[in-house]
Amino acid sequence: MEKNPTSPAPPPPGAGALSDNEYRRQRLANLAELEKRGGRVFGGAFARTGRLADLRAQFEEGREVRAAGRIVALRPMGKSLFAHMQDASGKFQIYLKKDGVGDAAYEGFRYVDLGDHVGVEGTLFRTRTGEPTILVRAWTPLGKALRNPPEKWHGLQDVEMRYRRRYLDLVANPEVVERFIRRTAILREIRAFLEARGFLEVETPMMQPMAGGAAARPFETFYHALNARMYLRIAPELYLKRLLVGGFDRIFELNRNFRNEGLDRSHNPEFTMLEVYEAFGDRRAMQTLVQELIVHVAQRVNGRLIAGPPDRPVDLAPPWREVTYAELIRETAGADWEALEVEGARARARAKGLEIPEDWDKTAIAHEIYEKLVEKSLRQPTFVTRLPAALVPLARRCEDDPSVVDVFELVIDGREMAPGYSELNDPLEQRRRLEAQARGDASKVDEDFLLALEHGMPPAGGLGLGVDRLVMLLTGADSIRDAILFPQMKEKGG
Image (cartoon, rainbow, N blue to C red; front, side):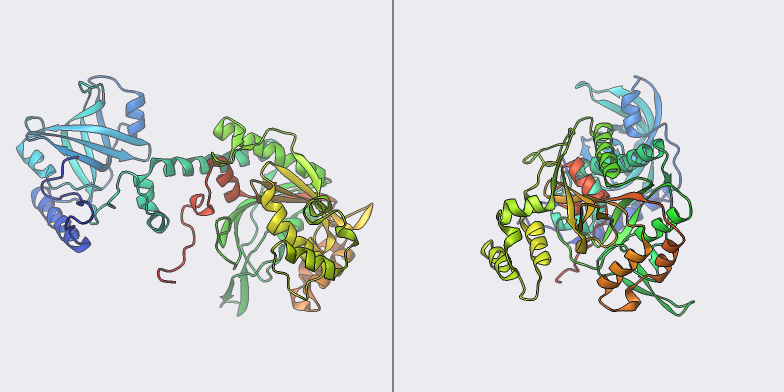
């Protein structure tokens, strides 16, 4: 690409590159020149014939059009120039001739930089190579970019910059735009699937006087009007169950949760979660629902049931495997696992490379084996059922074995995708289990939730689905940061 004669593109590394401030001063000079020539550069509304993809799809030789977008390529050729403009739908070539737009307008375009927004009006034609192009007869500056585009404008590769400055990532990498368009489609299809089955979308508080519904450290804030400490929710579960008490029988919420915990490739402190509850349902109903939901979304958004990164494809075609938690522990830790005392279990886990504190009981040791060794090995969709009751205090016990609860964890590509339960609706049993979880700290027991249960909650099935992880699965993203537009980042130097 030839350089804009007034505002050169960045030279290659080691070639005496100008500093960011020098480029900015040059762009400010170009701004002043454009203002001198035509007045307002940061323009207002510009009526368009359509988006650039629409012009391409509805191309008609000789058609008069108006288009607008960001200039992402410039190729001056003496008394004419080619450029590419880009909007959210794609790119389109434009062509300016000095004798077509006039000397003043043509000379003014010399002060347009890469990244600027312009509006054009003109006629559609095809170049000798067949490229759809707008022959410009007039153009209007709509916005000046005062910062130089990143060095690798066509395919921004700096991962740190891509996450911190997502706007540059979106401009430079069309595949990133496509991923987030698909994210929106995934959310739309989740809603369509559930609404078609009679589920009502509801909203519950994100700022709560108690952080409940899951075991996690909350974010704290302070509500000055009430002189009260509040928490960003870690899960909406307890409020959604209040709605079951109130008579709603099929409900879902699709919204944000917040957990004051670590960052890694599958965790972000602010994340999107789907929770679904069905009165008179159970764990099996939820298994069927989540399997049908994911299959539906994959077919509608991707058009196929093969998902995940190319190097480890996942086949979403049902039926999905179902296996008990105990079976998986025995497969990994040994067929004699149940017979081991806690000392033997600790030694067995340490022999497999796990760090096991001395004060852990056998349930905690088994769950460390599950999370660190078992879960990561489950690539194809797997429902892990019958977890220890101590791990899931809001779920109903299995009738044939009260030491385990009637739950599933759906694991796909080595990550937990969705837990689901037969919900506990016995207020007395629920109190005992919440008090045991609180370890004697009465302030951690949600008395208002227990009061609601005492008014009568129907038996129900419930599930939660990590939407960001579903987006990762269906777009092949390897990190949750690639599935969230603005992921949380550590401060530079931190």
